[in-house]
Length: 173
Image 1 (tube, rainbow, N blue to C red):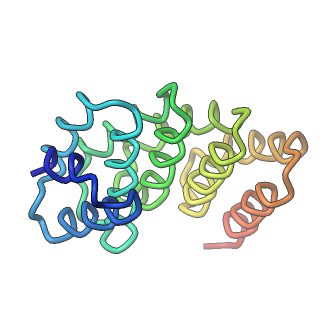
Image 2 (image 1 turned 45 degrees about the vertical axis):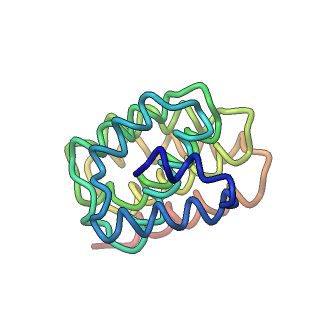
């Protein structure tokens, strides 16, 4: 089914992503099967698979399990920028469900916060801000790191994401 979807040249990329996301949301395509397929695919196809996961997890965070999130977190270290930014968005959507994965996600997201790519940095900011808002023990190390990132970040839009996360992290529980 996945090969057919990606080989269908009549679909525009956005349509393909929407269809794939719908199939994931409806449990027609199993996420573990999607991961197996993505692992053998070229970077643009792998990125589309992760983007469809991002859409599906935005609507239903419980659709993904911890093993699948571990794979997504591993993709944060990929060479392809689009794979990094789509993985960061999935991570930001669901990390609250998997507190044991926070520290491994934070390490890779902090690396991505220094990327040359604006979208990679923006997506890392989104995910790190979501982690800040969880108010876990990691914030004692994460807050100073984010304060440093803010002083070095050239894009105001990215700084605003971090500042919002810091503000919500500092509001008493």
